[in-house]
Length: 311
Image (cartoon, rainbow, N blue to C red; front, side, top):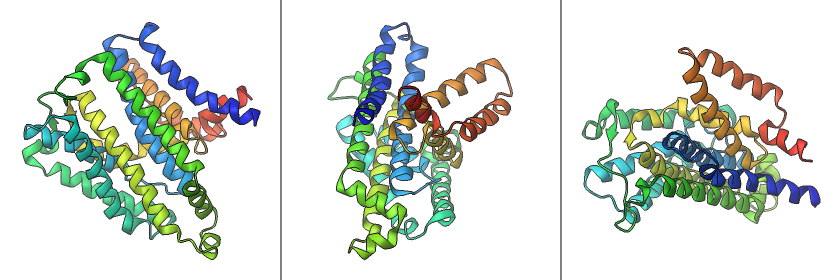
């Protein structure tokens, strides 16, 4: 019990550190922009960790939900709709609907077949976004302005946006953790271990997995809403399979068994990627092997390493 309580403090410590960062010399425009991007991708990574760790569903098309949320912001912006009360539900709803339709088919498969069919759906979404000439096509779409919150341009305030992203990240982690600890989460984990046993006690794993898939997609859509406002730009690259691979890397790097590991994985991924890009031109030649070595030699990921040191 004491070990569980101690481990529960670790994600809280990470969130508190992010909250304190702007007041500890990291409050400049560059630093807060970098942290906002890391926290937004952290949201998407936590939702994917919820799928991978909770339901055993390793999706390689998760970025499609992220991009659909971002494109909902862009499309509404092009038509003069910039009120968060309408834009945010539209982003979440569009991503959730996409997850419901594609998940209804994908979840009937498993293993490598599930990975490949989610990749196929993700690529379909990517090429659809590329064909939207009215919203930039391959070149992407630049927002006229950030989404307004009750008529106020709150998202344009650097510090306010930082804490909005932090609050959304904390809510994502807390919500997913509670779901996994509930009866719903116990059925998900049981189905991941042995679906036949779950069916033997009178429960069908399919609706539980589908609901988890839709929830994860909705969270990614919310992250897409924040990402579009953070960058003030949306492009098909957000939906690409490479972005899905990056999200999956964040989950594995942080540690699949712990939701908050996805937050650590996203933070380290974004910081390392940015730092290496500043140091050398061909930084990906170093970045890729570093990530592979981290996955191979960090047992339990970064969260496992931190937990052992504080155990």
